[in-house]
Image 1 (cartoon, rainbow, N blue to C red):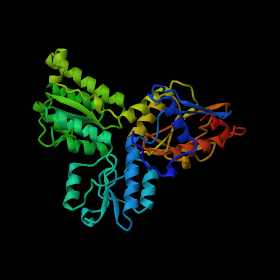
Image 2: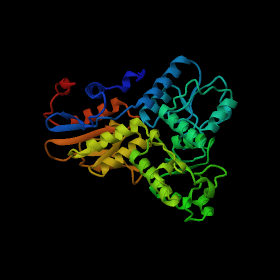
Image 3: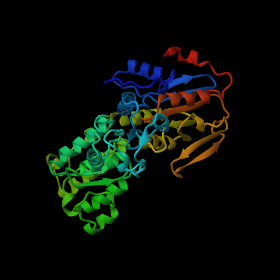
Image 4: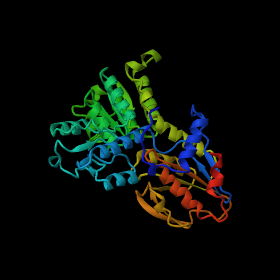
Length: 407
């Protein structure tokens, strides 16, 4: 696999060697058991897979290359390159400006750009409309295009099945940059509708079978369908693709559900299924799958608490939090600065959509077992900072150098 030039300040003297050790001893990625670091009074269980994925490392490599190759030029990002506050903050400190926020709201007007400016496309990709706008301005956004190859794979698959007269069903968060980009590219080739969850998939199924009046579709899926969408005609043949950071099990569940609806409604024999439902299993992102599978394996062990690091607007990270909080007290934090002291931690509550402070999050027992993982856009250095900060609360803990000798 291609290697990337990642700034050293994103790497870690603890986490990076552990990852290298696990890769060397498990080249086929069959062992999803966590790495256990035993410091005596505290033990850390670290997920087998987490942190920068191929797409994120590719994006960081290109973005820093753009800065290095263009001294004195204005450099812009269409929006946050990835959903990590540390990475985006560093880019801003180096002079990079954001044209839009993560919701697509304009921060800098298009008229302010010139053909001399450098524009970086984020890892989520961008819409066809934005590509056209940049082209009209004379900006070549393909020079520093950090779009994840696995996102482009979804676009290409959607185009392929669209050319075969399938309608595209995109499983994703309608307002997420990646979903907006995928929707934009998909609708160039086929009628397209976005479903956010199983509940919306079940509603869509009722339009597929005619159980709901077609006229109601436009209210139920407001701002989630392509122009000219005809539910009576366009839901007779479908294929499901996804925002790559969604839970793979959720995407597969939605796809299986809609496929079974087709089979029952049209009384399809096995060899007839693809007449109505396209096979798109190959659009699930390997990194999302690996991180989620590693989290499932992590959760088969016992622990007192879980700390998940990453950006609060990171889709793949929030899904890891959802998995962990089903079993253990889980604290979702952006960085080590959220660990206020041994008694207090400031963390993001997914349900309240805000930061809260929890007291006595570390139990008064020995040993304390803490699980650690993070999202695909979180640097190893952030996880190291969290581990070291937590470790400092335990008197008599073994030195890091002694524990790291095994790696």
